[in-house]
Amino acid sequence: MSILVTRSSMPSFEEYCEEIKDLWESHWLTNMGIKHQLFQKQLEDFLECPHVALYTNGHLALENSIASMNFPNGAEVITTPFTFVSTTHAIVRNSLTPIFCDIKPDDFTIDPEKIETLITERTVAIVPVHVYGNICDIDAIESIAKKHNLKVIYDAAHSFGEKYKGVSTANFGDASVFSFHATKVFNTIEGGAVCFKDDNLISILNDMKNFGIRDAENVVYVGGNAKMSEFQAAMGICNLRHIKTEIEKRKNVAERYRCNLNGVKGIKLCEPKDNAIYNYAYFPVAFDGYDTNRDNILLELKKNDIIARKYFYPLTSDLQCYKHLSSANNNKTPIATYWSDRILTLPMYADLCLEDVDRICKIVIQKNSTF
Ligand code: T4K
Image 1 (cartoon, rainbow, N blue to C red):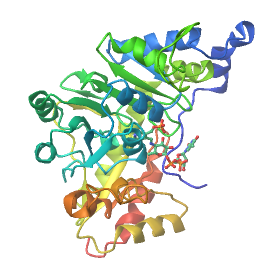
Image 2: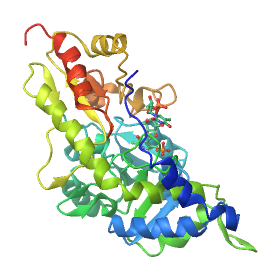
Image 3: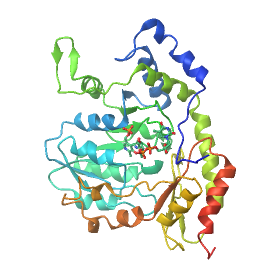
Image 4: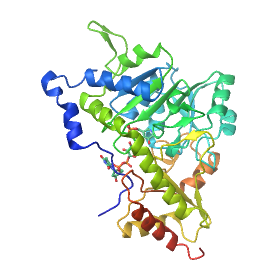
């Protein structure tokens, strides 16, 4: 059987059926029903965050969180090109200009030292990404934002359940946005959430995700439809019951990978930060000074029915829809360009068995004759 890059976590069939049973009595399937309300409250508790706005997917959550800040058209937003395309799309679909900032070579998150050099009078916000679940340099980013009066919206799609210095990643910046897509550590099939502290944002986001409707006769925004359904919320309620075990199992997988790959010449692994609790969302491996290149390893794994992925290659700034932008110049993001050519994310999910991890590592290591 193939080993894919990830595999959705699911509750037992019986558990999900039990959770959705009462929907057959109520016939209430969406539009902020009982499951939605319960799940929202459970997440606020789990994430220790005052406000959670649920969404039908992470992308629309990100788009709306940026829209809710009401930035002027064309304003500049500093962000990373080393991410899934959704991050950049969410900025551009709000008629804002992404300014691509380079990343740090140790954890591939946005480099705060480079952010400051990109700030102009048109800059309104920073959109950093906790890429792979590697927590950004929060302290430095917050202090730059404060100094220059910028908003910070974290794309926290990969960081559900993580903490830095004891604080959940839901609580950083003006908003933090999670994805609950099927491929994530925690899923609601499709889904996402905006997490924030500002009481004023609640009604704005609730209206925006529901066509801008404030009440039956008042439409206050040109909003879309981004509501989470009752079936998605029910999946969230079930999966939240198991999240601790889920992360614990992923931790075992990550440790086994580390045990096999740590110290192999030419292989670079992300080093965990002090004071951080991780969710082990991805297992990125960088090949630098290795006997063969990343693409050959990808192929060798594929020959063995093991599917790794080049997350995140190409950089979003290299994509056809963005490469014309003036900040989309690889000379301006040399570190991101360098590592994007060298990283593979190896299969990672809770039920990946440790013998399979050993087999994957063996295939990777065999490619390096100098080991
Ligand atoms: N910001 C960041 C930084 C993100 O990474 C993402 C999403 C977003 C924002 C936007 O959030 P959402 O709107 O998606 O909530 C995947 C996901 O579709 C996407 O959610 C994710 N990032 C991105 C990094 O990866 P693909 O095209 O690589 O996924 P796909 O379909 O190839 O699936 C990968 C593997 O996952 C499959 O080989 C098997 C497994 N899988 C997949 C699906 C769909 C399952 O086990 N079950 C499933 O239902 O994009």
